[in-house]
Image (cartoon, rainbow, N blue to C red):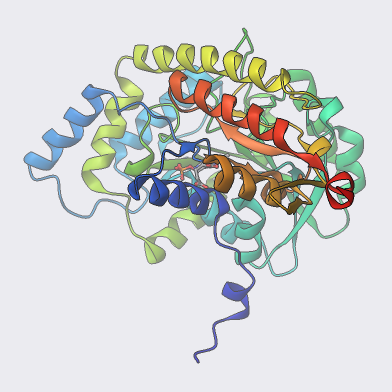
Length: 406
Ligand code: PMP
Ligand code: GLU
């Protein structure tokens, strides 16, 4: 047996990807699975983006590029950050990577020394704590409350930020809750971040998918002091339905981005050359496809929230952005179905998939064991069918004690 490193041994596989793979496998076996697992838009990539990449490929744009990405794309992203986000950066302060996931991993590696703490509000996206650990850091998880719309508040941040605290990871709109931090929330957190000298990693990958008139505000746009301590992370996967292209980026203070570029130049070199040309078309081209997708997501959100709230004893905060619902299903813990007891969200999700072929992600994987996550990045028919099954599943669950004595 070959012994693997402590670093790798301490890492769990990505549960979101694992559940998506499991649902796909069951489907391939001919099972009628409803997949609410994947955080992946069901739309195709808009045509003009595909055409730009295809043209680049055809014209022989197939060689290494600068490791941080082509100048044209870095300049286009810098202009987008200025226009959309009120963030002023030079193109040299933008590094394009193989997905926002890669941007985040680069950042944790560039910023954390062994034992440095990264503050991560829970519910969190599954990969943050694992990435921090991979970089030698220590994740400090701070629980937020459903009653506060799952927002970290300044008092919580103050309490969590000890002497080893180096950075805060903020995701707005949030995966998995859909919660958003509005300007007043961000300003209150900024005040603590300055006092505690925290770097802020602002994951804004869902910024375009906001509903009900909500307005996305970028942390780095709050003030020059905010910009000096913030690295903004974004990507193409969600807004442009480009998950398989593997393109994301980070932008922030020059010294940080230089370190990120150095790391990437050894670990991965450039993101795919012709994909970068597609990304230029995505940022500089027409944005109407983004708006069409956003509107459709909003309709689906409304449908899903309504159906979830109609299930007895299930509560669900209305998500303001992203494409996930995060209902509290803890009223159904310690119940039984077909002789098996559901003790927590992991048991609940496993039984739901096996009994009724609905794939969801257990909240435990997001640091919030009372919940499950459902993605509404799927068509309306699937949402109706899956919610009918979930409703029927809950109706079948019997209190564990009653089932035992029966
Ligand atoms: N951040 C969040 C919050 C996400 O949900 C995702 C989803 N994949 C990512 C970053 C990474 O996206 P990608 O690597 O596809 O750009
Ligand atoms: N971010 C998406 C999700 O949470 C895609 C899967 C992943 O990258 O983990 O489902």
